[in-house]
Image (cartoon, rainbow, N blue to C red):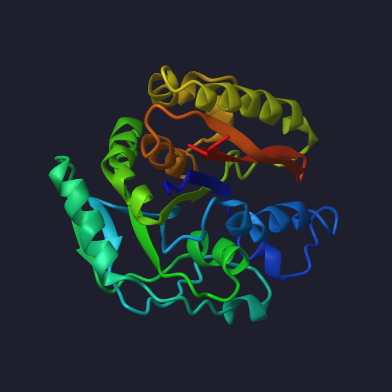
Length: 266
């Protein structure tokens, strides 16, 4: 069974594990419900999860190979208890080695880091996706320079993992303008989201469209810096020739956000 690939919204800091004071108290409830239901929606339970987070950049694509990664609380200004969250899933040094080998064999710069922990783009959503922390998790960095073509190529190199029960997850946000969460941006976020939905649905033109995402309606307003969009490129690249579809959409803090899955069987 070939697993689909997923691009999911990981929320705002530890938003799922606190009382949210900005906006409605239930602002993130629908996103949390989507994340909780993700594993059950798949054709089979993954043997491992490979996560590309928008919060780790390195000169080369770098894979974390720790057996028991520590958590990196890379957010600020949140309640004290959110700095004591735990997520005790195991890593997988074996999978990490294979990820590095696949990338290097495709001619991409690849490295391994046995000390790097999991940032909140990994542990915050996965606490909901796998609350029992019983699926091994490996994190892959973005490559500095943030070239969309390089990240699409990385996804293509990693596509064989899908046949081995590895769920490839891009963790970011489809709208990530820290100054753009207000009613003034609702229509703009909807326009960008509509472009994104059309772009991912067309396997023939997808790579070209995503490589030039900045020309999309309100592209640079959606992503003044693209680190939260590039995990989508990896998920898309790992599903060549297969359509992507928006499987979750919501309006949170006045803007539209979505999740995309690639290669899901009809």
